[in-house]
Image 1 (cartoon, rainbow, N blue to C red):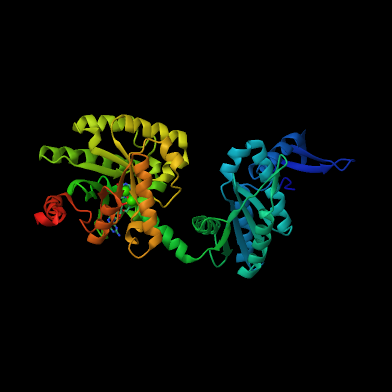
Image 2 (image 1 turned 180 degrees about the horizontal axis):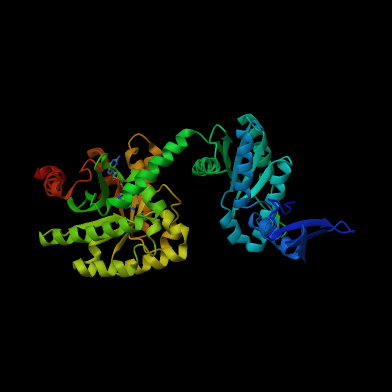
Length: 499
Ligand code: C2E
Ligand code: CA
Ligand code: CA
C-alpha cells in the first residue's frame, strides 16, 4: 500500500493523497482525499472513492507484464524479475542466477500443421510442464511465440542448472496429445549464469540467446552453456554482415568462370560463374565463407541480381568477340520466387540482347522440395523464357526420379564428391554410373564436377558422361585469364592423333 499524504504541513496549501481502508467484508477501498486549511488549525476536505480506478490501474500493470495465452510473465515481466534478481545478487543476497532459454524446435511448422488453437493448447501444456520443473521462487516466462525463459534463483553452479535442464528436456520430450494424436516436440536450450556470464539484464538475455542459436545450429534437441567464444563468433558475424552490405556498393564482388567441356566433341562449351569477394583486408574470400550469411540475412537477393546482371553482360561481351558459350550460375533457394523474379530475368535478357539458351540456372534439390508449387511455378516461368535448368550437387540429397519428372530440369550435375572418389571407391563409381544412366533414361544431360585428372575424364567419357568441369581442365578463372585457358583446354582435349 502506498499511502498517504506526506510532507510538510503548510498552513495555506491544499494537501492531497490516497488512503486505503478495509471494509467490514475485508474488501479494500481506496479513497482520495483533498484537504485545505480553513484557519485555526482546521482542515476541510473532499473524499472520493477511487477503488475502481485503482483496480483498473493494477490490472493494467499486471497485464503489461503477463502473457495472456499462458498467464506467465512476458518479456517485460521477466526483465523486471531479472532486474530484481541481479540487484539481490549485487547486494549479496543471492549466490547466483541461471537463465535457461527454451526454444521449441520447428514449432511454427507444428502450428501450421495442427492449426492455431491446437498450437496454443500445446503451448499451455509446455507451460505447465516447465512450471512443474522449477521451485516456486523461480520464474517461468514466455518471451516470444515459442520461446520460454526460466530464471532459477540461488544457482551458483552449472551442475545445478543442468539438473533442472535435464528435467525440462525429459518432460518436454513427452508426447503432446493433439485431438487424440500424439505429437513430439524437441527444444534448443541455451543457458547463461549470472554473475559469470553477465551482470545486467540485456547481457544475460543476449548471452542465453547466443547459446540457443548455437544449440539450434547444432540441429536442435540439445542444450548449450554460454561461453565467451560465442560472443566473439557473433561479433565476427556482425562485422562480416556489415562488410557484406557495403561490398556491392564498393564493387568488391567479382565473378570467376570455370570452363565446362564437352567430353565427346572434345571442346570447350561454356563455364559456371562462381562468385568471389575481393575483401580489402582478407583478400579473395570464397563463397562458402559468405553465401550462407548472405542467405540468412537476405542480402543474397541483391548479390543474386548483381550475379545475373554480370553474367548477361559477360555473355554479351563474349558473343561480340565471337564466342558462343553457355554460362550457368548458382541460384539460392532464398532468391525464389521474388528475389530473381521471371520479370527481372526477362527484362535483363532483353537489355543485354542475350539468347536465353546461352544461360543456365543451377539450383539444388532442396529448392525443389522446400515449396514444391512455388518452385515449379518459378522454374516453369524461367524455363519458359528459354533458359536451361541444372540440378546442382546431384546425388547428395533426395535424388528421386519422381520429382525430376515433375520439374523442367535439363541437366544433372554430378556432385564432385562422387567424382573425386570414383577411382578408389567402387560404390562411388557405381553411383556415378547410375546417375549418368538415370539422366539418359530421362533425356537429361549430365555434367560431372570435380574432374581433377585425365583418368577421371577418360573414365567419365567411357561411362557416357557428356560434360565435365574440374581442376583438370581449369580452376575458376577471372575473365582476363579465360581466353588463355580456353586455348590450353582446346589443345588438351584434342584426340591423341591430332596432338
Ligand atoms: P558449387 O555450385 O557446387 O560450385 C562448385 C565448387 O567446386 C566451386 O567452389 C568450384 O571452385 C569447386 N570446384 C570446381 N572444380 C573442382 C575440382 O576439380 N575439385 C574440387 N575439389 N573442387 C572443384 P567455389 O567456387 O568455392 O563455390 C562454392 C559454392 O558456393 C558453390 O558450390 C555454390 O554453391 C556457391 N556459390 C558460388 N557462387 C555463387 C553465386 O553466385 N550465388 C550463389 N547463390 N552461390 C554461389
Ligand atoms: Ca554450382
Ligand atoms: Ca555443385
